[in-house]
Image 1: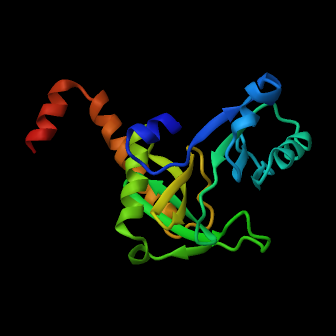
Image 2: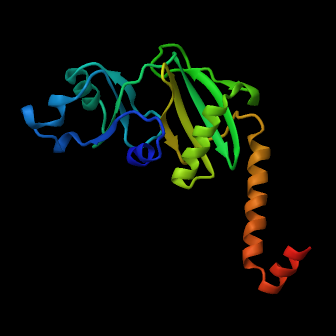
Image 3: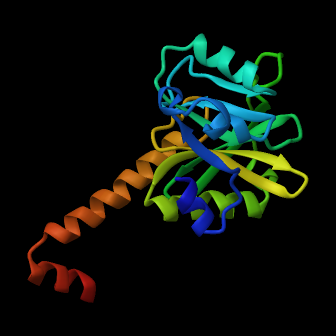
Amino acid sequence: MADRMNDAGIAWPRTRLWVPSEDLPGPHGLLSDLPFPLMIKSRYSCRGDVVARVNSVEELLSVVRQRDEDSFVLQEFIAGDGSDVKMWVIGQDVFAARRPSVLESMPSHTVPLAADEVPRKWASMALKIGRVFGLRLYGVDLLISRQGPVAIDVNAFPGFRGVPRADAALIALIERLRGYSSSLSAPASEFVDDRRV
């Protein structure tokens, strides 16, 4: 994923997969030259997964010891503005909301953004990510850094609960796909006649 994002020129933190059991001990291992602080995340996203900032090897190992996971994603720490931007894409429709960063101690309260509150740069980035991965329904998490938006996660199976107007956009996408599929399965003569009309 990180390679594709970098190849496409999408702002994305340096990211690597880390399997603790395969890391070499001492000065030859990955831990010996990691830049801190960094983010550690569960490799497979699910309820209760880990997303934490760690400031040292000791903190990193402490997080790992508390988890029953064999591998983790390590990501460069990017300083944001204190909130995460959650984006949901349905076809070409882009929805967004802000919520406090997962690193904040306050409860996460999501605040939907109206369409005119979503900068064009954010929407363009989200749509480009969909093209890079061939997705029509997906979510993107952004951090807004001093250098601009940085994508930090892509979710190919997001939930759309609480996203205003997502239901109508989902229905419209399904109808478009159904119409496209029907035209592909129709006899060639019908398809040609339909195109003439």
